[in-house]
Structure formats: structure tokens, C-alpha cells
Length: 318
Ligand code: ADP
Ligand code: MG
Image (cartoon, rainbow, N blue to C red; front, side, top):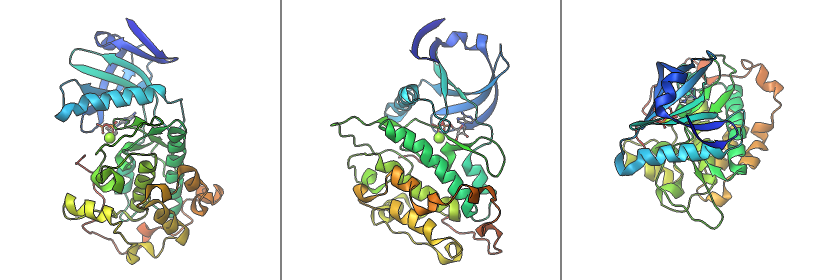
């Protein structure tokens, strides 16, 4: 039954054996290439997430590429509390199933939908700090995620101060010294200018997305979203965004400076993950985040903003 072992606790198995070991339960979510279901280990009763990739080649073989990226990156990244764990891979004729640690609190995206504007600043800071911890671990291992967005950040519980885990390594890559990678991949609203311009990909691509994500978490709005994809790309290329007064006048200068130092066109001038963790906005004591309700929350303001730039689930991938 066991065909190959590629890491201490990650096994590659025959698909035919999956029903011996797991009972597939309800759907948890779906993305471009995969369907994710809750599943139960028949022996231990423990719950996991099964990410089912159909084997049919997608456009330009993208599905196969995503599967390959996910298995190779999650297979080599040393375990980290903020990164979803891959436990087993079942290879079948028509499907490949990844057995992942189950993350029970839903997507950060859904959490954002509960707020009329954005999260309060302390909550946003806590989420971003944990994302930075996950990304620091990836970057220390020369891995770049390339698809950081609210749908790919999951909450461990339904509590307001829940911890997070980063998922979806379908675009993730290992950057090797001396090797130049150019790839037009990502989700339009989150991609860095160098990706649009087909310039080399570096770890800094993730830092740009974290800048976009921070803006969205604090405001509920997408900073570069235009009326067409073309316009979105033009806004990104010109770093054309602003801190709309109505929402951002209750947000601290430190938070705005944090975003400004990530949304920098020249990738070498952008804050690195280490610099971001050391930025004054992040260095506010953890104790400040324990009383999450103590800061002014834009969501408590009566002016509900229903506007065109409100962040919605991104259906498009480049
Ligand atoms: P895709 O590459 O197709 O976008 P994802 O890995 O992002 O696939 O999974 C799609 C969705 O499934 C996620 O946005 C999330 O809602 C859900 N999901 C993925 N992994 C897990 C997990 N380990 N635990 C719980 N839900 C998950
Ligand atoms: Mg996804």
C-alpha cells in the first residue's frame, strides 16, 4: 500500500486505498482546480481536509502544475504552526487527493464579510503579524507563496481573535540561486507590478500582496481594483491608490506607513518580511491585541460604505 516515503510523516499512497482509510464528508470549499472536503480517518476518528485534484489537464496543463507545486512545496517546507500541514498524498487514475490538516474556522474572506467596512486595527494587526510569521518561514526556506489573499488564509476557530493558517500552495515556488523565474501568475488585484511586467519573481512579490491584504483588512476595499482587468493592472503599475479619508481617518499613521512601505513599485525597495515584522505597527506590544475591542473599529462607524471597490472573492486568476 505504501509506495514511497518523501518525508518523515508524509506518505504517497495508492488512491484505491483511500476509502480504506478515510470517509469523505461535506465540502469545505473549492478553488480553480480542486475541491476540498472534510474527511474522517476511519481508524482514529480524527478529522482532516481532503483536497481533490481532478487529473484532467486544465488550461495549459495548469492543474497538473498547481498539483505539482503544492506537493513539492508542502513536501519540503519544515512544519510551522501557521502553515497547513500535508500528511498524505493518494494517487489515482483520475484524481489525486491531498490529506491536509483541517482548519476549522473558515476563510479570512468570510470573516471580512461579517464586517461592513474592515476589521478593527488590532485584529488586522494580529492577522497580518501571523501571516508575516508564516511568510518569514517560507522566505527563510527560499519559498515564495505567490497567491496571498483572504481566501487562502484560514482561521483556526470562529473566535474573533482566532489564529490563522496559510493554505493553497498551488502557485508556490522554490527560488533557486542563479535561476531567474518569470511567470504571469496570481490573482489580478493582488499581483505585484513586476509580475504584470513579466520581470523576475522574487520573495518581494509576497510582500506586495501583504500590502494589498493589509489595506483590504483595514478598509474592506481593494486598493487597485478598476472597472476592467486592464484598468486594475494600470493602477498597479502606476501604484495608483489612496487612503480614502472616510475610512482611513480612524486608522493610525503607523498602519498607513506600513502599507505604503509594502506598496513600493521597485521590489528591492519594498520592506522585506523581517523589516515588516520590525515595523512600528507590528511592534506594538502583543498585549495591545488581547483587548481587541479597545481600538476604534471602522466597522462601528455608522457610515456604511457600499462602493465599487469593496473586496469580493476574486474569480479570476491570471
Ligand atoms: P485552490 O487552489 O483551488 O484555490 P485551496 O487550497 O485554496 O484551493 O482550497 C479551496 C478552499 O477550500 C479554501 O479557500 C478553503 O475555503 C478550503 N480549504 C482548503 N484547505 C483547507 C483546510 N486544510 N481546511 C479547511 N478548509 C480548507
Ligand atoms: Mg485558493
